[in-house]
Image (cartoon, rainbow, N blue to C red; front, side, top):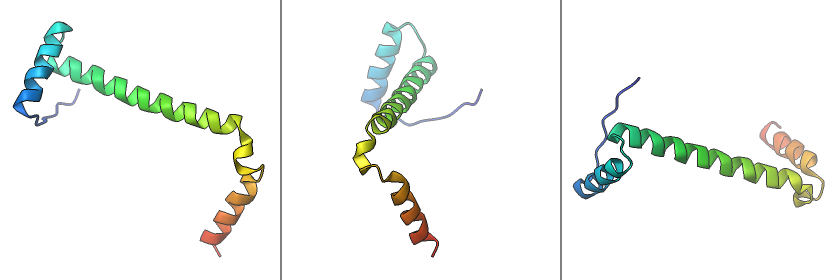
Length: 77
């Protein structure tokens, strides 16, 4: 497992430590939990957005393939 060093303002570190103690975990454990949660939430939000776009193909008037080809041709004349 890799180790990292980060810098935090003193007041944030105090709040962080208090929160970690309430959750009965360490700084490292809390950082790991928060990072995993944030990355999962970001991934879930992105997946939901893709699902929304796929569920409503009318966004592109049914011409998505044409737009991709036009864009590709514009980049590769």
